Amino acid sequence: FARILAGPAWLHGQLADATIQQWALSTDRWWRRTALVSTVALNMRSQGGQGDVSRTLAICELLVADHEDMVVKALSWALRELIVHDAGAVETFLATHEGALAARVKREVRNKLTTGLKNP
Image (cartoon, rainbow, N blue to C red; front, side):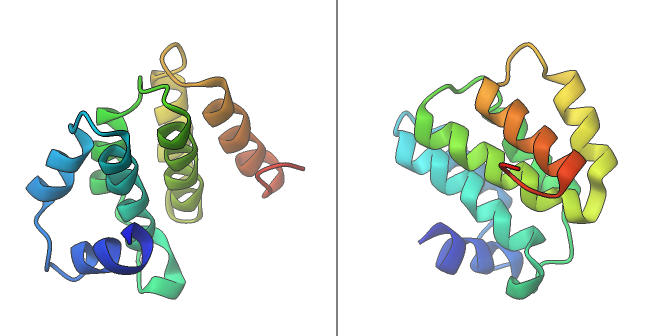
């Protein structure tokens, strides 16, 4: 749903930023995950994404301290997908939120930054 429908709809202006933010602030982990996975379309070239650092990181910021496993995995994916467009912004995000990020996010994103792979 998020990568195939909601993300592209957001990319093409059919979903408002406020809607995605509302999902990110939901008490339901699946809506929080949906918000993060929706950012993937903003950055995935095969989906028409050109890289949207500000909107991607705004959603990531809302969920940086969330340690629900499915949300953590989505946060890692969102950040890894953004690396192609602005690795520096992702590095800054990691440094800024070092203390709050789940270990999985730090490990997978750093691996992607240094080796190009999630798990080398």
